[in-house]
Structures are given as C-alpha cells and as structure tokens.
Length: 467
Image (tube, rainbow, N blue to C red; front, side, top):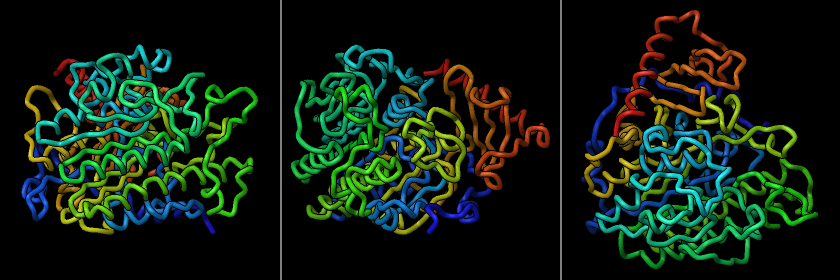
C-alpha cells in the first residue's frame, strides 16, 4: 500500500481560485457564537507539533503512519490544505503565532541558537502575547511543553501572561532525561524541575490536570509538544545512540521492535506516541463535558526538516518541495486542524490560504475582546473561512527569512526568492497546477511577477517601519 495520497489527490484539494481582499476586525458571526448555551466563554486548547511535515499524518495522506486521534479530530472539525506558518523555524514561528505579528514586525525573525536560553530575551518585552490579551476577559492560561522563546527574566512564560508553566525551555531536549546541551532543561514556573516518563505524555498529562482544575472558568491551554523534533547527539550521555525516542507501546502498534534501528520505523512511533498524547487531552475534554464549549487547534510549527544522513529524511512534506528553514512550500505549509463545535461543520476541508498569526484575532474575537489599537496585527480572523462561509481574509501572505529569502502568495500564485535555490532571483509558481514548485513562470508572466515583487517590497517597508 502506498504511504501517501497520489499527486492527483493533492491537486484536487489544492487552491481556490483567488483569496479575498483582506478584512479587518472579527468575522461577522463570531461574537454570537463564542459562548455555549449557558453563556460561558469558549475555552481554547492550542496544540503545537514540532517539525511535523505536511505529509506526516494519516489524514494528510500518509498510509504508513498510525495517527487515529488526529485523524478523528480532523473528522470532527476542519482540515486545512493551504495553511501556513509565519516562519520556517521554531523560535520565530512561535513568536509570530503568539503575537499575531510577523517576525520582522515583532522583532524576532531568527533562531537565536548561539545564545544560552537563560540569557535570551528573544521576543522583545514590548510585545504582547495571547494569554495577556485573554486575561482581560477572565481567562486562566497554562503552557505545557516546549517554550523556546527565551528564559531571561521578563521572557519566561509566567512573565508574559501565562498563569502556569511546565515544560522544556529550549528546543529539542531528550524525551526521557530532559537534558539539553548537557543540562536539565525542564522547568516548573521559573524553577528547575524533574519528571519521570516520556515527555509527550508528561506534557499532555500536565495539560489535562490544568484543564481539570480550571474546568469551571474560561481557560487557554497551550501545549507545544517537543515531538517530533529530531534527536540531537548533544543531548545524549556519552555512548548513548542518537535515535528517535518513543515508548514501547508505540512501536508495538506497528509490530516493530523497540530496538529497531530503522529511522522511518522509529519516527512513525514518535508520531503515534504524540497522537496518543493528543488523545489524552481530547479525552479529558470529553470526560469533563467541555468538548462542546472548547475550540481545539492543532498545527505544526514549521515543515519537516529533510536533511539526508542525519536521520531526518524519514519525515514527509509530500507533495511539497524542500522543508524546514526554507520558504519553499515544504518549509512553511503545514498541517492544521481546527475543531469548534457549533461553529465549524465536522468533516470539512478548508482550501483557503491562512496563516498561524490568524489565531490571535480569532481567539480574541471568540473571547469577546476587541482587537488591539496600539499595534498592527498581521493575522486576521479566519473563522468564516474555516467555517466555509467566506474566502481567505488575506489578499496576500508574506514571508521574510534570513538575509535573502522572501516570498509572497496571492491566490494561486507564489513569488519566491530563496537563497538556497540555484537561481538567486525571484521565481513565480502556480501552486494550483504545480504544488511542487517545479516550473518557474517568471518569464511567462512578467507583469504578475513585477506586481507581486512591488507588493512584497511595499509590505516589507511598512512592516519594518510601522508599529
């Protein structure tokens, strides 16, 4: 059996003909749909997968992996085919999603891997993130998992609006020992912590306990898993093999030996264990009868890293080109599922271009809050588009990465300047007919190329000089 959907299958679920002109404010029907029958505000559970590719999940066409809980979530909500992350790397991706602002606007558009986390400010302290907004509507907020936004004083989760934090502060600690670069990376609040068990389950269980304790008040539960980040030899004791880590029961689901050295088998077990962790959180919502009044969002922080000879070529961004840290589709188009009972019809597919920064205005509108007036948001409320009632609120989507990479999408077309490409100049692609970005249409469509180039340059100038 094939591991993936055919290219024809993906083409049939590709892009709608054109994105709508950008809208402002909240989608029209949100406020009257944000509460349950008792008048309570909607809870929000936002789960962030780490480095999971577009072709890594069962509901996105992978026939070899076992992700039944994620697949069921997609059947209960909307699966997005054209959903983007704001940055192709972990740290700026998280900053953009939580602020609703692009990295070149919020001041964090790079991976600060050379600076120790305890000294990182990362996201400037002038930036306001989602839990701080939601607090004004009476929400309690908790973060459980990978922070990766700096841990200097003022930058820690509980400094930035989260009432509770338990997780790893860096990027890719060991799944069992919580070691990162030779030190303990696990913290509770602002203090070092210890835990027994597999990190995916530990973080999921902490999220479940937070939900249980706060079931009678509106809550925002942010669960940034460290799975399925690739293993790093710097986080292993001397003599320990650098392998994808998963509990024995995840290997057993495939009849694999936990001692297998096949990287693809080990990676599938990591994905299945993450699926189980996600299932624990969904089950807790069911047990507490909170499902009908909880918005659940699941997405990846960037595309899978496709780097041969480092155990990273086993993930999949199929049928997209390239992967993490690039602005090719494989680096920025990610799986995303949203379940909102009573607002989003189950088992639907959204083919409108949307971006992770949209979740800040969506959450604010769902909480009955006005959008900020003291700063510009790049995100726009996507709820009507997710519900199949409107086109994308974005006429254009923009990306800026590194010293030379840039991209802009308008409807079916994407203009890209990628430093890792053989052609350093702009390239134009029709994503509807060429999702794999193989045919450069720049010469065939010079006017469109110049229009998109000028629009990107206008946006870049505005974003770098505005508030």
